[in-house]
Image 1 (cartoon, rainbow, N blue to C red):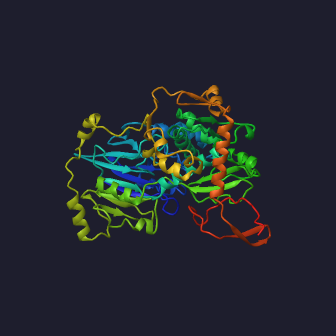
Image 2: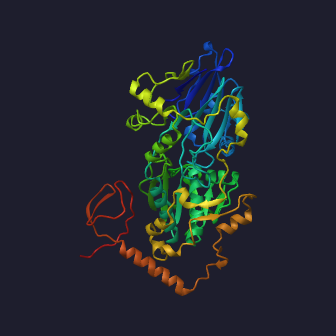
Image 3: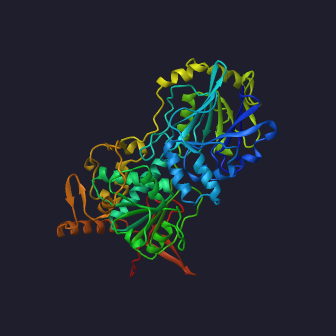
Length: 568
């Protein structure tokens, strides 16, 4: 038995890798490609003279950077494996015809796409199954089981992952019923996801409650995730802010049968003014809209561009440059859902694999993992084939010291490994984490702090206290019989009238309630006024110096300015 790995795109995303396994098929190497990110060219990696053919492609989730070159890497009739809901999302995205240029390749991808929810045989002696990964709806790690005579070798590719839930989908659970020999670790990290997530939700709710027409622009799956958090935050906060998922952001919500409080879906629309409304949050893609583009967010932004009472919040996950100036209020938030470094370290310590291969990181961010764990750690930036297992057993990197080798061998004393066919016979009774979306709603497990939302949203903090939230952050909604959104449900969700705790809340509020809200808003505006001096006005640009330090602001952040001339 011989197992090796090779980076498939070390100079771009570094999330894609080729696994080679010799010893399963006579005179042929089994080659498995995990994810097809930017720059992957499998034809340049496989050597047909050495009887290398693509055996399978495994996809971890439906973010474009992980399947961008899928159509370019179809060969040898290889099936494409993905968790069921990732496969469903991909089917819709690919069928829409926006990802691949060639129609024939699009049809081939759809034909070969194979959903898997349990152990699936790739070839005799090699099986694959998904495990939950958090990060985004439907995401999964890829767990491979390799028969090696009387031993079982296990390889886990995490893909992008979080311990947190993602729109109800479970996070990565390291307490697996089998030991992991090789960990292909996507080591992208982010320490402030929960803070940014809470800030984004608070900003959106605050602007909507203040009466602004709010447009949030995000990728499709991030938009769905936001809608999930906003809709269930409505319940926790005992408020009723309509949320509208539009265009490609609506498609996965409908396909996955989401039923989220206060959320309606609109895959298509003709008139943007029917989708946008004062006091409503509309979510559409792409992340950064264009003033003259044809996409949903482009058309919606063009409608509010010159509206000083509207708000644009751009939710970014990559390197796109956001819009900084417009007639409406403009904000941008960076929200890249990855675990902290501490969580990554704890995961590796718990799994204690023999090998750790660092993916999706480069430079100092990757180098920090060298010699960090009681494992052989591979931090490579080339397309060399690196041997993990040969006829002598597990093979350390050539650069490790004798001391490191002894440390790894001493720590590798696991006794729970299943031997040979024992795993295949026993795993029917093993409890692997379920890929199913959870029926209970747990905003804390999603990374959302409801109390912090109240504190960060002036329109909420003026009317709420911690004791006024409706119980804990965990509620239960049945998904046992999901229903497709109906026209009546969409109209009801977008109507002004809504139901809260069994009571009808309509526009027929008393004059006293309206005046009370106006008083609170006036108080909020007065409390947040800061004097500024005009330093220069040239070429359409005005430079201001604020005399006091603004709280809760960061360098480069866009803030709104309300003009009031001081006669003095």
